[in-house]
Length: 242
Image 1 (tube, rainbow, N blue to C red):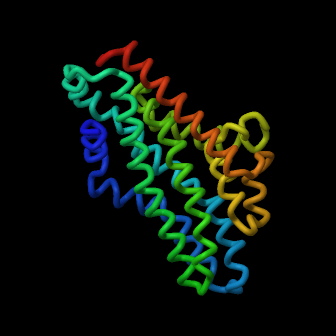
Image 2 (tube, one colour):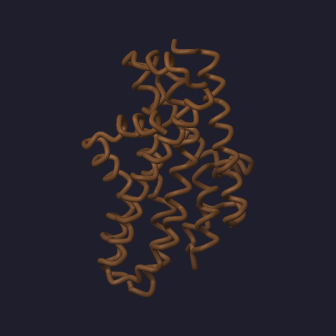
C-alpha cells in the first residue's frame, strides 16, 4: 500500500493532472458545443454518440499518465532503491498497476464529470450521463493494465502506445472481428451499452460486433488486468532494475 501511494503521488503532479483531465474532458466540451441546437429529448442519444467516439481522448490521457508509473522510477534511477527493500516482485507489480489504475480513474472521473456538465448545460437530463461512468471507469482500468507494463518494458512507450490506440483501436479493430473483441475501448463500450438507453448510430458502430453485456465486459477487463500483472511481474523478475 505504501509503495502504491508513493507511485500514485509521483504521477499526480498538479500540471500533469490538470492537462490530462482537460484532455479527457474533450467529449464534454464537444457535447456542450454541439448540443446548443439539439432538442433536449435528443441529447441522450447525442451524449452516447459523442462519448463513444470522441471519448478516445481518455485513452491518450491514460497512456501518458499510466505509462509513467514505473518508467519515471526507472529513468531517474530510483527503482533500484525500491528493489533493495524486501518486497516480492509480484507485490511491486500489484502496487504499480494499482497506482496506475487509481491515477487513470482520477482522470476518467474528471472526463466523465465534464460530459455531465456539458449535458446539463444544454438542458439535457443528467441521468443520461450516469451510464457514461460505466464507459470511462472500465476504460481507465483496462488501459492501465496495458500501459503500466508497457511503460516499464518499452523505452519509447508513448509512441508504441499511441500506435496501439491509433492503429489497433481505431483502425484495425473496425475491420478485424478478433481484434475488436479484445479492444479495451470496445470492451468498455459493451459495459456501457448494457446500461445506456440508446447508443445511437455512431455508438452502435463503435461497439461493432462486440456483444453488449456488463458481465462479459468486466470479465474481459479482469482478464486484461491479470495478464498485465503477470507480464509486469515476469518483467520485474527477468530484467531486475536494469
